[in-house]
Every structure is written in C-alpha cells, then in structure tokens.
Length: 78
Image (cartoon, rainbow, N blue to C red; front, side, top):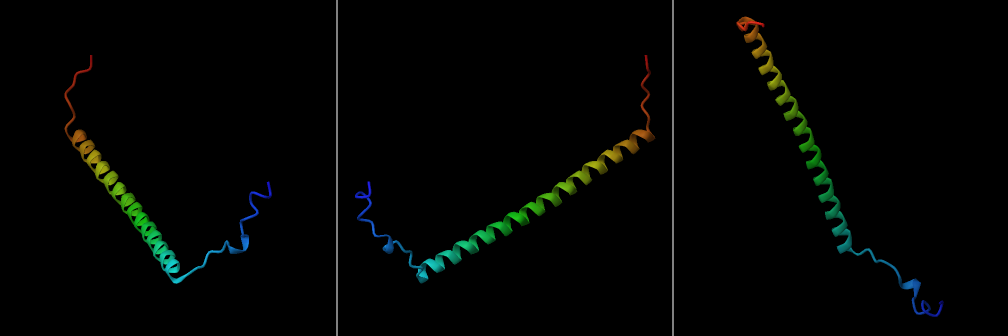
C-alpha cells in the first residue's frame, strides 16, 4: 500500500498566495459583504412595510366599527 503513494512529494504541496489570488479573495469578500448588507436592508424594509400594512388594516377595521356603531342594523332576532 505504501508503494502506491510513494511517488507523491508532500513538500511540494504548497499554495503560493500570489497577487492575483489576493485580489480575487478581496473581491469575493467585498461581494459577500455587499450581499449581506443588501439582504439586511431588504429585511428591515420588509418589516417596516409589514408594520405599515397592519396599521392600515387596523385603521380600516376601526373606521368600520365606528360606522357600524353609529348606524346599527335593524335586524330582527327570531
């Protein structure tokens, strides 16, 4: 079994961090940060819109209840 792996030179298994790889890593990191910021901004906007929508719905319900209390229906109970 050791004869199969005898040709591999582990001392040559290195990764040279050249300028191109450094720039690629930097660009990738910047893209991930911008995506995260955009996601966070979108999430905050969604929460604000959801809150505004709930307030509008609650205001409509309150107006409807006020109108119903001013003009009671003439339903006869049987």
